[in-house]
Length: 467
Image 1 (tube, one colour):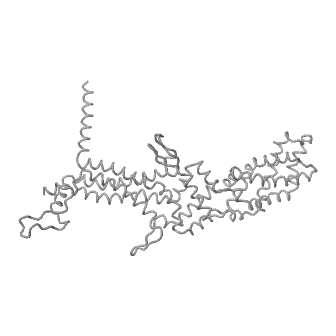
Image 2 (cartoon, rainbow, N blue to C red):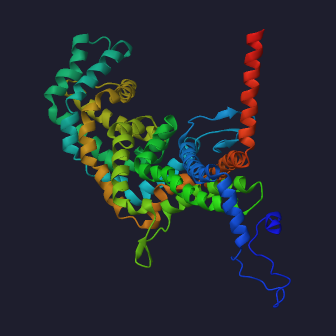
Image 3 (tube, one colour):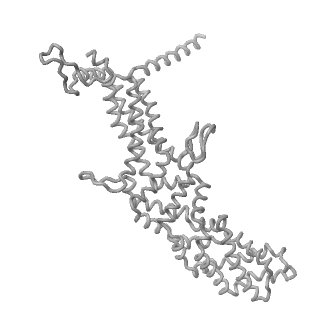
């Protein structure tokens, strides 16, 4: 019995030297003395040992919960900025959420997937009917031209004309020449459809939005993967509890004082690792006996496709955001300005010719420049038609449902892969700290230390009363 207790982990006993058969070795797991010792240890502190699986369950839950929070928060780096590299969440002392930190890289990856596998921008914009666009936007042209006339009249070379006649040009002339107005808008729409790739940079449109609001990408990922994040958090309880039972058994048989701390580290590492594997692996459906196994996220492909397409179409690639990118993106604005100016000059010449006035090139350039600046104020009438006609939500959903499992897995997995090791190691560190607490409970040191602190506080309180 004493030999068993002196060893770190006793699985065998020595045969009786006086035995007729000599020094026989027993079966490795036939160790009555070790079992008796473990039973006695358990009886001496049953609550302490029964607490081990419960603490392990809490550690598993908390480390996984913290891992999910570390993916999205904080939005900005929090800590002491002694050393922090751009797009690296972990600083020397501090942390920034993985998604907010790597928004640009992750957005680029996502846009590449959308533009190469889900959407053909040219085909999508061909769905717009130029006649319908002209009819919808037509009533705004007289308002736009009158606003421009009011702004540039004092600066124009036609100031000798009666003001009433000049201001009548964008109002009465356009109204009386509805066909010219319709033709201008129709041809402008056709020209934009023909040149949409040079007028709209979807890459910049999406990334600029994500960089301006670093919570937007996180909202998209949470919308698509909330069930996986909930599973990642809650699974820590069950994984932790099961590993805690093993940890308790090891603590009963192994006399090493660091057994619980080591076990806590293993629980913290294993619960994060197991949950991540459960979500994304196996990628393709795999038969295992009577069971068909596949990653939890991958089994929800249709549901995720619906969530992703709805969020993307209603928050990122809306008509308002697309037009905003066309009119303001430095990489596409010059192309739109040139196309719009050519169409507008032709339109103004036709109108001016109708009243016998031919404006100079300087005036035309001023009109075109003002029109581009004021155009966003008049496009609101077009947004509902464009959003409905482009049908981005339906297109994105259908194409995403058709993706192979390997490609679909890349929708969400990259946010875990970026710093998966960091998340797992953080779980291990927290598990180690929890193991230290368990170790203090099991050895009685924690109770002793707490009792001393309580007694010290009482003594201090007594001294104050007597003084």
